[in-house]
Length: 364
Image (cartoon, rainbow, N blue to C red; front, side, top):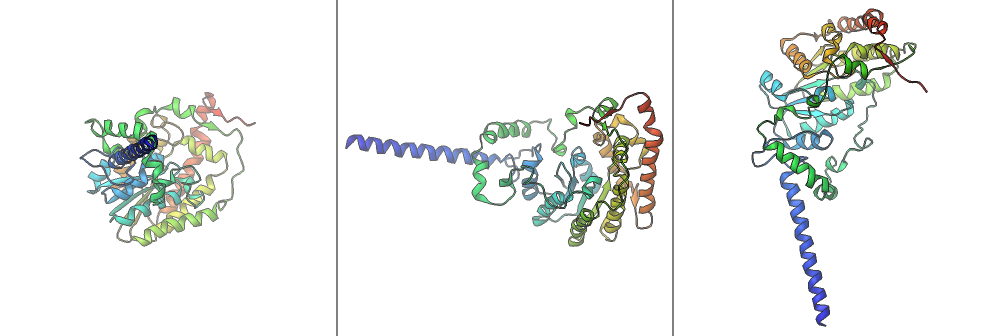
């Protein structure tokens, strides 16, 4: 009987110990909450945002802000403070690497649920207009327990060894550092190099020039993506939406001419721009034909990713009203982009061919 009592007491003590440890672990994760799944930063700590797939949706739900900086990886190198100072707002980033319209609209919807948004600054990547109009978070392996509002699967977060041993220490070190800049959320430029050697080295040129596609080749997806964006605009008439097409390098334009996609992309931009400009709370800017930038590979890491200097330059132009399109001029502006791409493939890319500086893709 004594042995049975001892065994019973041991099991009870073990159970209590396990329970206490579980509460301690879950409580630690909840309090520090490095993915901001439950709350904004406590104890006056800075927000440490460096992992968008894990942190973006939580920060949009729980932080205090009234402006959104929306887009793909080319938007990550913005400093939020630039927008805050230019428009007298408190901004936050809604970022998805792929920049697909459906994914970005999902994030925008999350923001609007509990926030009054004054401005949405939205970077339109040309490829996003032809992409499927379905969200890709689950299909690309994102941690859905952070997205689905299901408290029962939060155990994957609350009892996660990597969160406890890696994410929280990283958060604490940066949150208490005087050098950490909250405005540089998700910024990747710090560890990258820019210049012709990088841009050319990462550009694999299609060996053959394909026949140009019909301009309506992506019409079905385009119409769905137009519906997604225009519904955001229509449903939030008190929010000012500022859309813009970013300045990719001439290498990118050379690439889509050779793949035969250029005319379809130009058509998509015209149709999207026309649809957006029907609304009074929309402004649309185009920087794609900024030749001084697009032809200067010093600004680029690859064919489309540019340095933070260009992010700031585009914002400054928006503030000054430069590059703005209207229903009267948008076709002329976008036709000018097409003309620029013709100049690239017929003139501007030739010196790189002559110097054998272009690497052709390997076709098996």
